[in-house]
Amino acid sequence: MTDLTLGALYGAVTLVVMFSGMPIAFALGVVATGFMYFFMPSSSLDTITQNVYEEMASITLLSIPLFILKGAAIGKSPAGKDLYSAIHTWMHKVPGGLGIANVFACALFAAMAGSSPATCSAIGSAGIPEMRRRGYSPGFAAGIIAAGGTLGILLPPSITMILYAVAAEQSLGRLFLAGIGPGVLLVVLFAGYAVYRAHKEYKMALDIYQKGGEKSAYLVDEHFTLKQKVEMLPRVLPFIVLLIGVMVALYGGFATPSETAGLGALLALVLLAVIYGVWKPKDLSPILASSIKESTMLLLIIGMSLLYSYVMSYLHISQSAAAWVVSLHLSKWLLLTVILLMVVVFGFFLPPVSIILMTAPIILPPLKDAGFDLIWFGIVMTVVMEMGLIHPPVGLNIFVIKNIAPDIPLKDVIWGVFPFLVLMFVAVVLLCFIPSIATGLPDMIMGVK
Image 1: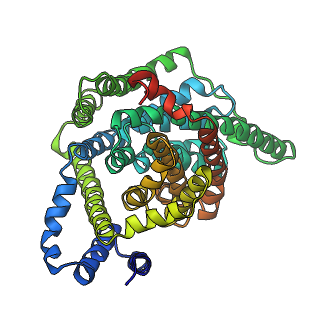
Image 2: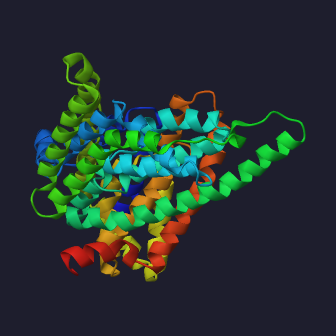
Image 3: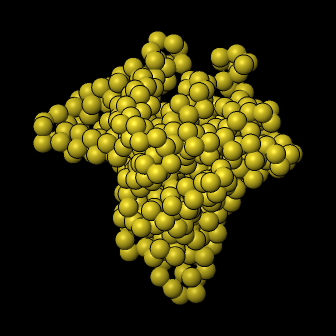
């Protein structure tokens, strides 16, 4: 059997098993084990556990469950709601201030949690009802939270970036720094759209009211005293200090990523105990249970994905695919376009974790040979995978939103996220024309590679 035939069979069997409804981790494991049985020496089956263990015995991967614990500590407490409320209190006078408040709250929470679904759930549970109560359309309220939640895999500490650093053998610290500029760019783009949409929705609400319709809550002017604003700060500042402290420990060279993750998780639990009184076993149980569940699921996907990639490599599928792409002699930017389109298609069906671990052996060698900076590409790929979190048919954040606000029709949620997909595409184009948006900060702090 030729490499092309074997590769096509490998891909086809993978799609069939995944569409059967089997969980991703088990689907990848079943396909990898099946091809080991039929196409590899029988003795290779005895090495499955060893291969999985060796691939996962990485000190970098240790940071994943610790960052998840930190995110769960914040997401399963009132911290997310307090963060959102404080930003809204200070920004309610700005046109579209409530939408901007949600974007900023998502960005800050994402930087603390490192998880898109956690960000979407924590901020959305407070933000969507508040936006709808104040007259924002359900689709826009759902869209801005779903899009803001995607910042969880771009702003450091990002679990997705940790996996990319392992797969691409790149500096995690440099990758984290590279995500800050594009993250800020997306925050600005999202906030700008929130202002534009706010003017549009205000005119619609005013027109309805002037024609004798019901007065929307959107037209009611809120007022917060300086005392009320100041009273919101004590509950938020500790978590901002936590964020700054973790970043200083990591980029100042005081701690490794794993040590920083442990430090962040411990400090988050301490802050919950001090500020919210969350320290009893019954209070900590949901946090620990959520952390164990998500960590187990994610690490199982990682382990099976690495086994899947190992089989691809052993059977020369990934090498042949890379060689085929190179043999096309595509221009540098056409090669990038083809690869990003492939990532988009994978995003229809797979989460970012699986996309990175399954495609890295194939796409990274041709990109490196073409002269692309793999740190820069990691950021571009992350933004493209963010788009996958809010576009159907999978769109994980879309289903998180449906869980938070089940009364919002799925059609409205999808149309609500569409403008943000366009903004993400604009961000990708800007990164291609101005790569220093991503590479400038790491080059300035850590030196040019």
